[in-house]
Length: 334
Image (cartoon, rainbow, N blue to C red; front, side, top):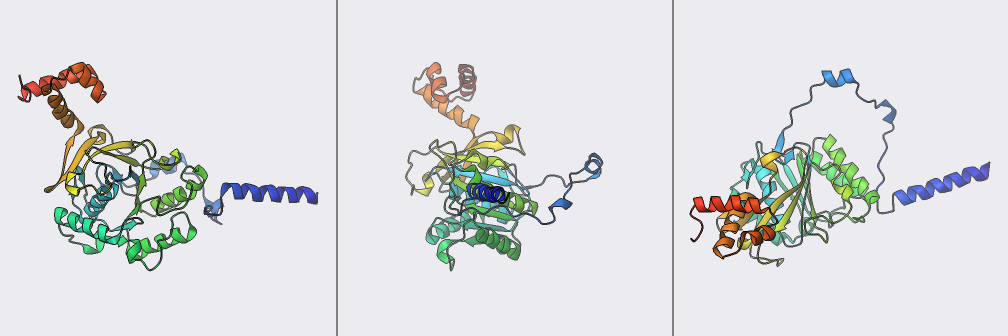
């Protein structure tokens, strides 16, 4: 009998070790868990939850979790910093609108402070001065006394929890997942403690944006598909510039914003669009408008409609429709 109990304890220990390697924090259990009960039908009917509000419309709801990912050099930090500044100011960025200024904590685990400062000053010049300066808070390695703690450790999660509470943070931006954690990205089990933490932040009313790298497929992300299970919005930034250099001149930046997951919005709001940054600031146009200009250029270069459809991966009927639009606007060389 004793031998059997020992075997059970050994198996249990091995199972626990397999589930949670040394580098991963297991989920903490609540000693009062038995008090938790499911809601009844009548309780649901009598409840009055708040109407869904947005931190940034249309893709970032209050208490939302968003992923932004792209290949190296595409501009994910530049894009995300602009989003964060708009949230802090209550302004606009591209097609996105912020109804109410919010206090943000931007955690950068990768870039040098001089690069972050340069980008911050550019964004400040383009979007304007913050009226509520306390809304912008930055954690960056060079200005921290110690290494920024990883979010897949108990120490790291408690540190960020305490800092959020201390500063009254409403939106947490983690840039990026690779530099702020040490787990195996392909392991769904090792991702679970981070997912649990993100859900816990949501329960506390915190909105989170996680920045990540693309995988081998530049339109996908690096790691397990479980990363997007609880995410409200997943945005893929895709390079549309001629150059793919890491330090590409900022005035030549051009990207396509593609919603790979959109839980809280649909229709026209969910359509992809292109954005570019020049000396005057950011500009954008819908993918349809972009295609009109591209098809007009292809037609003026004597390219056949069937080849245009193949090149753009669209139907020939769509090309024919755009041709009529181009003619009506006088965009074609007859």
